[in-house]
Image 1: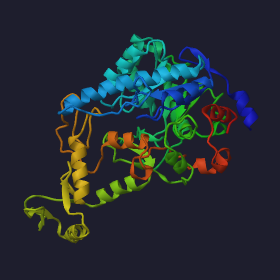
Image 2 (image 1 turned 90 degrees about the vertical axis):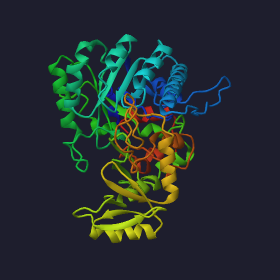
Image 3 (image 1 turned 180 degrees about the vertical axis):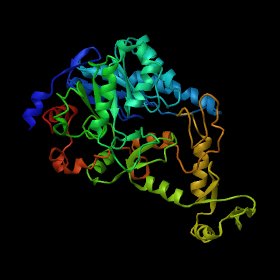
Image 4 (image 1 turned 90 degrees about the horizontal axis):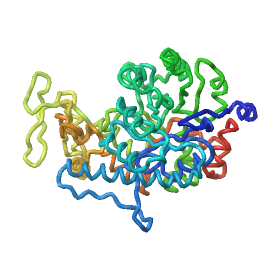
Length: 469
């Protein structure tokens, strides 16, 4: 089977050069780096470094710590943009030097990240000739086509349906079709990180990606994009599983993106603890949840961090500050003992939480209250106050990039995503942080390639993938 796949793995022209149809998925906050993406490109594929809060270094090669001095969110937001541009340029330079002229080099940005437009423009301005393409998802990146074209690089929108691409095409991309390098179809049920599930799709009922990709190809062909590749992403592990896609005229030309497998390589910057944890995952350990402050669903390892969020939301009741029709039972809270009123059939629950030490009630935007420990309440409030605007809109802190606020109450059921992703990327204990992974990450433990704790180089991984395994 491997030999059959190898013969079928024909090069594709992507971002102006013939490459293997193997793409490294960009993973934000210092996970897809210049070293990992440069190595992927050096192996003949398309390497992707992340420009989402990327690391930068001083003249001695030491990591520049990200510290915010600004007194206001707006001031800290400007610092975040400056750090982002500096880090993106640093990673692009490392990737360029590492790829040795082989493959192609892309950068990944999230359209819903804070300062996306400024960071994308700043990095492209500072890396002319080094970057060949931009991948962009997490939102509807209408303007990415215009920005990419201005710098002579190809753009690759990340979508989860033909409908989403159609909207992007009709509103913006049809004006600049010559720089559309490909369309990334990311499976919203199987991909790691943030997922593009729509309100009409059931998060608990995964759909077969093939008909959805065929629908995307049919629309692309209808508007003259017959030769523009689709890049299948999310849940891709063995190429042999996609053998019938490669020459299928209802899908091809097609390339394949790997986001989770490159985590476990020599060049991957994640901690040894993180790599070891990946090798022990079982089927079902990756959970699709909606705690992210972006409002998107996302997929992460079900660990103590995620469990705490689940339990926090479970300690939640509808309440009022005054007695109402069905909210009649008063429960005193806080030092002043001001009562909240809850339903009679939920009062015992609340008393139980208070007795167990969850004595701080925190209001949510949905007229409910969650109950947490005093220490947890202090941490939540501090994280909300320290917000630096890492998202265009943040449910956790109520920051909004253009308006300064979403106009809604900050949501204590969520978390500071910048803080936890910075922490796990720079060596914090993985059990206590958000640990993004695709739903097939359990295959690290089952795939014989990784037996006896083997960790390949990126080159060895690309070579293995190309055999079909």
